[in-house]
Length: 189
Image (cartoon, rainbow, N blue to C red; front, side, top):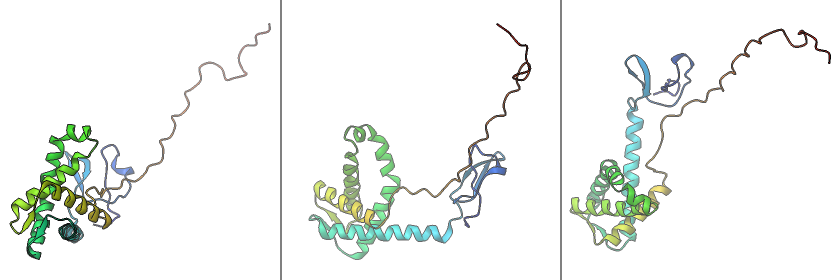
């Protein structure tokens, strides 16, 4: 979708909205609501394919570097990366929500354990992909995270950039009560 299409926010009327990078504008009850994630087409599919390839490369590097992680064939490697990607999309947010108190107590270090558990679960699903122990899975999840970080694939990317608006005009001065300054009664002391 071209960048000149308009994304409207909740608090701005339609006539002052500026162009923003987004999908199509959704309507709820006739009012402008939020940009939808529709209409991304080939660009979105290419981005998903790129992320899958980066994850495949990261899993391959983890299998090559970390002892205890083995992959039988390149087809198993592709399937393992696909399964790990699906688990990261659907299962990881639920695990984060359920274990939020532990994540806060460990200052985020428990997220490494969640990644290792997802890698172990991937090895349990894909028969040609083997992870020997939890510690191998922990090392593999660190390697996968580092390779993904180096290749520029992050889990959080905002696709909506809202335009900046000028500050609101100050309210007009209130009318003065009484005579204008310097025109009132003279008090001589």
